[in-house]
Image (cartoon, rainbow, N blue to C red; front, side, top):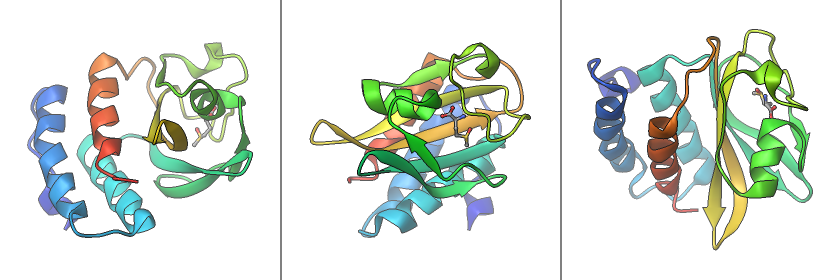
Length: 157
Ligand code: SME
């Protein structure tokens, strides 16, 4: 199934534009959030081959690891800590070209070099964050921000 989703290489924007309706169709009619988050990260990992793609879900005063693809990761992150906890606190997307230059970055893996974290909003409140890590520096930009923000809206939290 995931292989069927893979879209031939084009520009990054073209890949996102093709992937979005496919993920939308995949999630349509399925109300279970975990199932939908799991398929979304699988589709993103297949398409872009990033090092790590996953969700952290807000549980009380912490983020707790949710569905992900990639190596094992830290399970709990406090509000305001690391890139994920800061994205949650500010309710905004963070693009980090060099994780070592981000104060308080949480290194789940020393192989992770750059990162983007996109909050998932419901009624104006952050309910989860999507975290994408690359093993190369400076891999994320405004195009990733635009399309990943669209992507997480498909979760219809
Ligand atoms: N680097 C993240 C932690 C999550 S892992 O990279 C999967 C952070 O600083 O929030």
